[in-house]
Length: 326
Image (cartoon, rainbow, N blue to C red; front, side, top):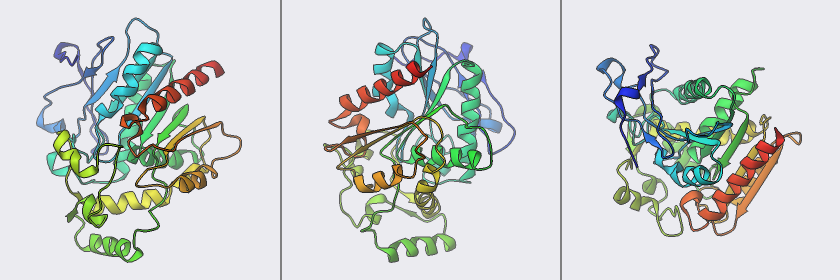
């Protein structure tokens, strides 16, 4: 059940444009959809998020969920509802990613003002979550594009000698390499045109040559616009080139994973082959606790695919393992 609790909300204002403000509400055991009407001064940097938590239980683990390309925070609902039933001490927080379909600045939907803001947003949100849950384990969990954002953020911190910004990492359907069948000339053309017209927009279907982009067993990417309100039909070349650069950096990012890590991937993923994921995970240090789960019939959106029951159960088991480690 979605509820709006304006009297219980606390507006967090941040002056720098690279940071954003969030509103906090508590509602248990169901999730709270934060709704708000901030002043014009902070409207463009105030992102909604969803929180699933039980007030009757002491929270020992918090998942911070980053949704994927053309996704939204609601994508974590299946996982969160399962955890509410089976692990009441685990909470899930998932926020709307900048530049996607729930960005408060409509003109920025399908674009990115500054890629560094993705990391700033994640770190700011993590700080807010830690303040609410000072004794809880923090798990960064990213789906597809979300895995790119958390990996780069993590790498940039630890590679400079900083402390790991989270206690564990989970990634589902990480895009770790640009497809081999994506023509190099098209890649260079997109990059070249983006320098001249960074705000020019193109659809994912146009880049794929018109081929259907299968997201689950039953849906393709082009159908999402008919089934959700946050779908973005076209994205700027600036955003697409940025994502391409982040994809190519994923193996390097993996080499610095130092916290327990979970990697979930499917055999029918349109964007990344199983061999590419295996190559990616081979870069993770041997000293890092790594759990890999492969679903031969799984597509890109694993938590909503035909294998979702198995996927969500595997995530829950992994979380229980973290708890048992102390």
